[in-house]
Image (cartoon, rainbow, N blue to C red; front, top):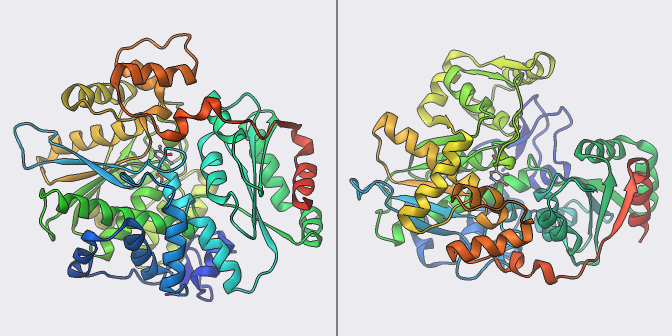
Amino acid sequence: MKYVSTRSKIRPINSAEAILQGLAKDGGLFVPEKIPKVKLEELGEFKDKTYEELSAWIIGKYLTDYTADELGECAELAYNWFDIHARISVAILIQDANNPTAPVGNMELWHGPTAAFKDVALQMLPHLMRMALKKVGETKKILILVATSGDTGKAALAGFADVPQTKIMVFYPDGGVSKIQRLQMVTQAGDNVNVTAVRGNFDDAQTGVKKIFSDKKIRDELDKLGVKLSSANSINWGRLVPQIAYYFAGYLEFVKSGQLTLGDKINISVPTGNFGNILAAYYAMKMGLPVKKLICASNVNNVLTEFFVTGTYNRKREFFKTITPSMDILISSNLERLLYHESGGDFKQISRYMNELNNFGKYKIDKPLKIRLDKIFHAEYVTEDETKLFIKRVYDSFKYLIDTHSAVSICALSKYRGKTKDLTPVLSAATASPYKFTGAVLDALEKSAEGVDDLAQIALLNRFTNAKIPKNLATLSAAQILHDDVCDKEEMAQRVLKFAAE
Ligand SMILES: *Cc1c(COP(=O)(O)O)cnc(C)c1O
């Protein structure tokens, strides 16, 4: 399997090179030349196997320059951390009491070390990168630089900690992340990790990191230290491909529960931001997972809903800060990969669309492409009040607690069912533990959290609902603080060089 760019004709490269490069030189994203297929009978054989085995098998269909043993090792190292009993678990709710054959499987993807679904990819990526370095004969160390507004920083730290031939450095805005988010980061152990606060806001931290990436002098100095810069952002193929596996796992959980027979169709609903998670569902569908519709769920930053309804992507709109911050996005980068595949690999057209987006803030896809997307996708957006209403409704009906992002997915799905009367069983992606968004969840349950800090809110929510607190959040207040460095934004480059030399 070789990889090409979404924006121009390039020499096809192996997956190891694509993972190390991250972004193609023409600014495009790497995509597989062809989407591989799996047979249902083959999938059925994984019913009694572990998530590691399933994951290595699916990933192996794409990363053909890795051996089965290598991928097996990556999966073991990535997922041994996950709660043994729960990894990718599906809580099956019969959402519609009048339709007991229309179950909703709430696929909990948040049993990793940071209690959010980004762990599934970020636990795997570092191992894929480490092996990629070997494959291309690179002897330098990779230094991952991250600017974070909260969650991605911790997930990346947890993934790269103590992975050989890598280092990771995370900058966050001083005073600009929640108390829990800060504690999660500054207590991160590992010989190869550094966490530094920047005096300024998230934009200052991000601009600082971008500057370092484009500064030739710093790169030369790092080169002398035997260090190469890289990033772990969500458009890297190595972050996307591990996500495809869990849709197969979720489907098998449904089969194991007796709610489905192998071969029955499902719909999949995904709370969407950068379009990575739902794109993974699209790849699973194209590989042969029996899926009828993909439901793209958005919050009031509804640029994707409008796109799927009208065919026009328009980023020039008001930006809202919501209780689903991980979906507060106006440019969904991974959409580019979908457009590439569904246009039959028409890189000239994709390149035009992306130029229009860059220069004019919008583009309109042509009719044939729009018709193709209509067959696969349905899009809905959900307001803040509806999000809270669904947290309460699901809790009251099933005594089952979901977070704000997961609620957006369930609410969008409910709108879809209301409009279409399509009662196909649904797999809904639950992307974070409710304990990561305690303020909004308490509010939804009509419990006052006024004046209560976010660590105390965890205890409060636990007292009200009895829902289990993820281990790493429960032990956070007792964890030792290991990183307390604060710098000005002008000092970021110097901090990077210092850490690289350690
Ligand atoms: C990142 C994230 C999302 C959005 O996923 P995309 O792959 O960016 O579409 C949804 N929910 C949570 C909790 C997230 O962290």
